[in-house]
Image (tube, rainbow, N blue to C red):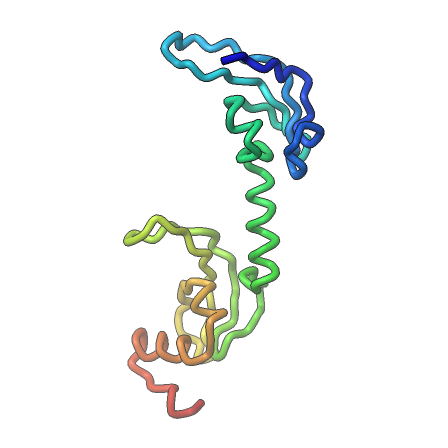
Length: 155
């Protein structure tokens, strides 16, 4: 099979319209058993240099160093309301601090958590943002579990 010299390619000019990658030069591969050709690349979105194989670059599976994917996740979270601000109020809970992402033990998935203060003045509690966003009744159920109070009849 003929090898394609991709040196200097701007992938958006070679059939990958959303790509943010410029191929700098062929990467020297020390592993002689590896039959793939690797390329030194530059991400035009963030300026990061990285290495990838030619097949992934030409197929369009790789459009950036990974920063484009992160940017799309942030945009999706904002549009879906997954971003919660300090002092946002959900039922009896007020968000006082963003705790960032935490990996779930049971699944390979991360959830964003917030530290919330209850109106009753008890100790702040850590709550996943999805629970805050997905509705008042789930928050009330959380109260029942944590403090044995039944707020469901008040709603």
